[in-house]
Length: 143
Length: 334
Ligand SMILES: [Zn+2]
Image (cartoon, rainbow over the protein chains, first blue to last red):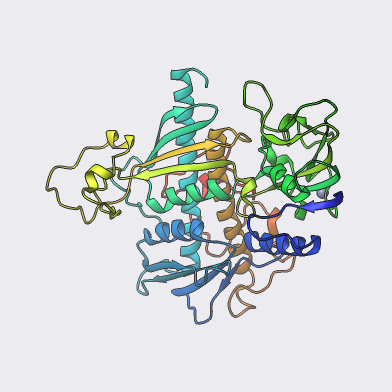
């Protein structure tokens, strides 16, 4: 029964052989994670400075929805929406359109601002969480 | 391009109230954030926080009744301590071919039953080998009083197992064995005032769907009260229970950090695109590894668009240890 380098079988489906399992594992790994030197964002054809669609590789609702929310808050933004065109492709699309007659309406600029605002929001939540945790520990003794 | 982001409800910004904290779980209420953000935090905690788990097994001897693959699968699911897992590299980022001390922890398992009766082999029988990235990483989690850890298999007289287990760093998006939590409790609007849920029921939705204990934190809706059509979801009742490898509060902080790393990665690539905007029609041409922008080790880059001062719509107050992203930028200074 002894063998070497037995791969971890996934739930469901028999493991056919080492090479099969290894290849499939590698495929799943590449679906979930960005491979080295792979470009993460592309601009889809037909985009202008005030309306563009971006394609994010290996991103999903985790980034898509939060980004959509924060970008929509920007007053120069006329429309912001995201979609995942096909469930078996690791791609997320984000559309941004800004008002043509407003200042600072460059979509790349708006996208960057959205990303940075989300980072700041994360900072505030971490800070508040840490404070609340310390306060709780102080009041209730260390847990 | 500064503007005040209208806060949801009050202008206090996001707040956190801890209801319960123990070595196994944190229970907190997250207020004044949007559903989109709260859900991103939940998703990132469940599937993208790096932990350690056994990934490769060399089966040297197995005369137990269980098949090799079966035992290997069980080994993978054993929680391992993942404190300061940042000290461990991902194998794909490592110089080695398969594994080495920088990107893995080796645990050896040897058990042989020589007596009558049944011998039980536990997680405590997994022996981490030195050298390791740090003293915590890869050690089996043992929380029971005995202390044994998880039961792996049973042997009778004359049976023997000998295995070399290679634990690696990974995330649950790739395989659930790397999940830091068993589940994340997440609820909002316990009274269903917003009617985001349409309860299935036999006779009475009210009798068949008891309100959770989170309902005590909100006013009960009046009889005949209409639906607030412009009502926003929140507050969010979150409960994070650890599998044992990371402390629950660390899981929450790591979750936010992972989210920030995601954002930093995209910002970085956007900056890379700017430099090539003129040469490439779409503004995002392929970037060579040592690209013209100086790539990832460039500290505070400036772009033609970067005209903002230090002011941020969120107040930029966050000078936490996690405020500094791994890409050298500090979120609070944007
Ligand atoms: Zn290595």
